Image (tube, rainbow, N blue to C red; front, top):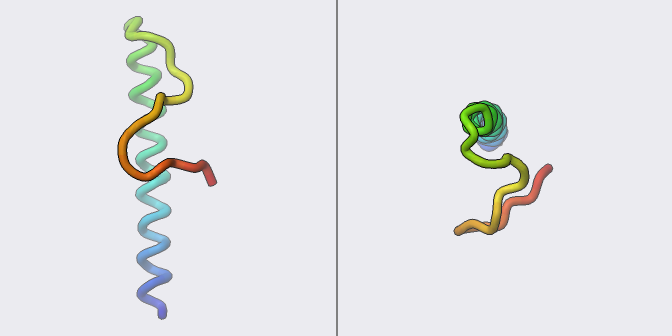
Length: 51
């Protein structure tokens, strides 16, 4: 079972990095007047729930 734990740890780390990148991108877009940030609208795929 250690492999499953490694995969979960890697997935959580990637999710964390993705959130950081999205926050930076949102800040950059807001800085150039590309619209308000905030919660994203409805998307495609599986629904997202914050942990």
